[in-house]
Length: 256
Image 1 (cartoon, helix red, strand yellow):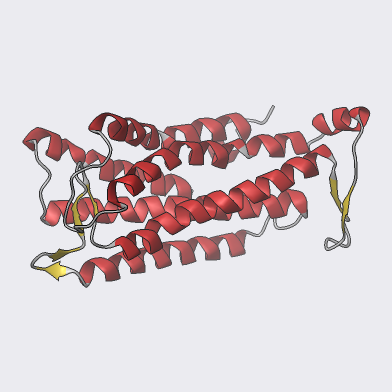
Image 2 (tube, helix red, strand yellow; image 1 turned 180 degrees about the vertical axis):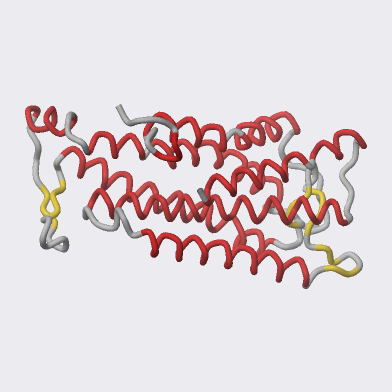
């Protein structure tokens, strides 16, 4: 639910582009600041939520624990929202005078200004790549766990065994309930596939600039708008994957 709320808020922030399109220019001001706040808050929350989902999925499948830890899950979600909101509010409120404005044109929409490289990394880029790395490691381990190459003792979860699996055993594993859990991994995997393109374009646009106030793009508008459009579809992809992989959730139907 937290991930979907983040996707929705991000969609609202993207919708702010309608004004820039109608005016033909992106300019600083209250409207620009509002868009920057919405986009940074929603995007970071989605990245951190995806990291939490990956860790929870790994623990649930690999160690067979934590599937019903509702209170802990709510606590983690509250911490994520509190951290992101405080970070964004403190950053914006400390840069409000003269040319020291936190959210500026970048250049096709408003986001963290190009002179705030450290804030860009700490506030968003770190979570993009950190979550990607964590997800890659955990999903590879889950893949081998589902194949039967890694076995965790049920009563002694700290005992992990590695073994080779024959063709017959792999066939049995493929038909086991773990296959359904493996399908769920498509959810965060597809999400990051949609998101990383935009992060790369953004990184190219501000890395290596000698003038921090220079907002001229290093990437042409065509590729930029393409990856932006793909990224904006993440909410739709999340809903489709959830409906396909876990239809019993959110009254989407009965599981086949």
